[in-house]
Image (cartoon, rainbow over all chains, first blue to last red; front, top):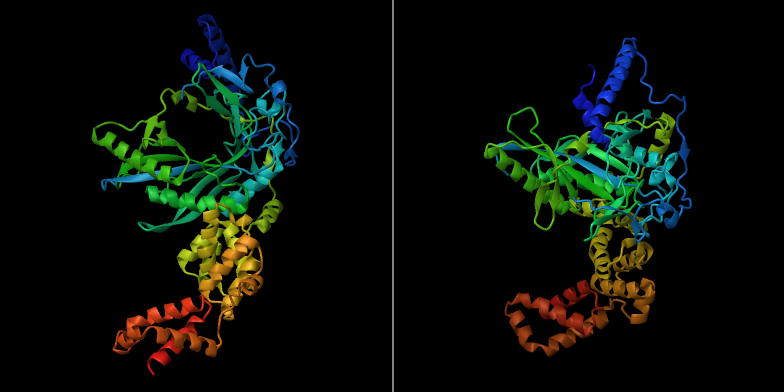
Length: 95
Length: 478
């Protein structure tokens, strides 16, 4: 096995995913297969090949430092389940 | 400090840039606006929005890198730092991980205890700020995303500092640099220059580093020093009690002066960085780097050296005047008009800064321009007024904006250098104080000060003090 059930559980927790035990088993199998495929790719000799961060051969897409109109508070908040005083309301965060 | 242990400190400084718009979208970065009024699909993290890099942020990063002796990476990439928190709408922060824009820099610091040394700068990377959480008494917290996506530079030092004083010395080098460069307003209280300290201790001679705690929430130099000193004491106590220092994040509480553990956040440190597919690689050519190098202003450390070497100022004076760019620029403008650097320095550090402090205004808004002040100094130089009267003239110019010559003429402040006129006053003073004259002539030479004071008073401060002294001596010894 390339990945343990515990590792899958841990990664799921980091992603805030609540998985049923059956889902955990299923995903562990799938992720194991994916990692197995990556191992296969690792067999290739990539000495001297620059790591690729992007598939598109492009660089330096910039915008100039100019202020553009924002979308407005109303539109910014329109999908929020709860708002007050121009703010999104979320369950209390305890620091 | 406990002599059995060596203190090891590394600092992470978040420098908020002064760009007009955010790092990946065109929303304004203006401070103190209505919550969420400066937001758009990009900084709200709405699906399908595409971040595009603000060119000015790259310029500012290159400037800061060059000013801190870094190597500018010809190629750098952006990465996603994944974690969940309500002030982070996308569920990740766009930052740099592998291949940051600047690496391998250093700053030179000086402390009384350890003298001069270099502190390494591991890296400087570009990233976006998170939003702001506002806590109220109720069952909810409020989220304002105006600050989300504001450009930051994170300047990461090597663990090269060995005391709180060295940490402060490092920050006092870095802070004026970013302000001089104009990339940051330097305001610690408003969070434009934020510092986290990684603190650990180890027995002397031990090679490997002790376990560190990261201390956050440090918004003044005084708190940084306090927090580091507290943290060192705490860790030594833990070790002495047979315990182990835990690697964790701790918050400094300014009210009680202690650091407190932020429990339950250990998992948050699994950030799962990966290259952000939304942002293409950044390539900074040598030509670009050299063009930016050409725009760098003279930096505070270089200015201080020049003020000492070329202008002959004392180290302390050179330090005070070079610390803030507007003050240094005022001073240089003044010296250009009145080529007596020491006099200029005395006036800038004395009357000028005092008046600015008293009136609570910055030097940029100073009513007495370098040109107006240079005229005052010129009139001291050519004996039109005394140094003491010059302060009155300065005050009058501050109030009215008139020139030195206008004030001197209107108020009749021109120094009396006419020997006959001064002799007359001297004679009057001698005649009016026969007792003191007798005592003086009997050997009580201290009384000279009294006579000078009387003459100056009678002349309303306008008599030339040198001449007064001379004539008094002559008359009293007759």
